[in-house]
Length: 110
Image (cartoon, rainbow, N blue to C red):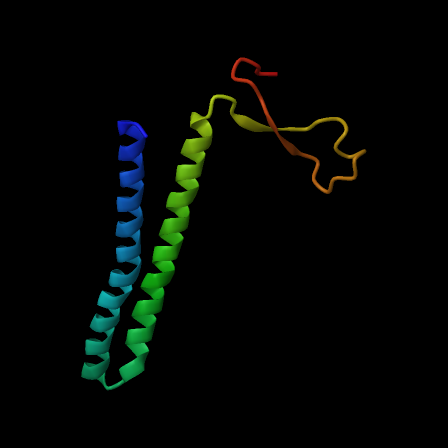
């Protein structure tokens, strides 16, 4: 394993650890804030659950958007980028979708 591969692997581990930490700690912080608000207002489980679940949903949404952006960036970096085409034999083969994903060489733009 050369130095650039090792660096990429370590960056991947670090990014995964930071995302896991963010996924656990951020809802916990908002849950504690909701608990203190609940105790002050006398409605103990309400704001704790609302704040925690809202932040957890936001974290999942954010991670999904980051994943999609990473995949688009990865697909664009590939030498033979894939793109949608409508081959003539798709309907004859009984496919439910009129489009198919085919690899197109970088120089071919037809």
